[in-house]
Length: 416
Image (cartoon, rainbow, N blue to C red; front, side, top):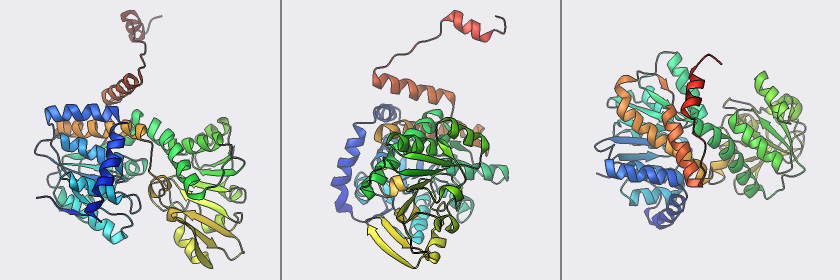
């Protein structure tokens, strides 16, 4: 029996329109859908998915459903669910528990409801499904074969659980696949973060100073796009090797305490708490703009900022201005939550075609190999990465070279 908890089912036509648009621009996932329709690899299986619930995610859900899966779907951020898309999935017969601007309590309830089917496979974004199955509701994992994790933050959490010996099922580190992090994290985050910032602020980036916290793959994309837009970019880091990379990529590198006084825009993408704290905030320029591109809203110390501020004013939709005791004001986009999805539509469609193709094939990998994997974090197989890359090149009409037998023999030999 279908169950759901959404805002308004009458919004479904708008959601269907959005999903149709992304379907037309996701050739790899569409090809996988045709294969799944023919082979029904998930027939009789229940899959619970928690990813930012917008059109691209919805299409992934429909692809898995086309493969026979009974889908139970929720979001992965209280601000990223699009109510019309959730309605469209319910209209298509899926079980959906999510709505925009849910409270933290409602969000947790939706996670629990999505897991209440006792799934065979989970598809996670940030580790919230895995977290609940290891803490509040381990009983809901009794049928679980394993799952897939979408994000850097989620993989970090899972590897911590593996190190502590408490991970109860295998999880594929989808984030670490080459066809995911090299494109989604870098090009997808880079473009979508600045699309969201520019749309929300209506301010120019050229000529401004942008401070990017961190220099992982997401931060590299953010810094690269800021520079291309004409900004002066400062990078803050704790890793000396990444700091060297940022320097050699042409960016200024310094501690956040020093950068705080210089930035016009601040974007965090570290996966760590209090990357920007109240001491940093007190050094910032009047009208500085802060936002976060990490999964959780912990990178900017919002609790500290609320205690510190003397007044809070809504400056624009999804931008709050905080008056500081020193007379300056700083602006925060989307309450410090994931800016590109809480204040925008997330990554470009073609980028998510790659990432969600990895998800779909990794879910199939779990189905076919779970009995032999153990309770560990599993790398995406090289075969999946190569298959997706070749399909993407073919969709672009690009051909590449192949090794000759002589070249293969040369590479396999230690003799010159």
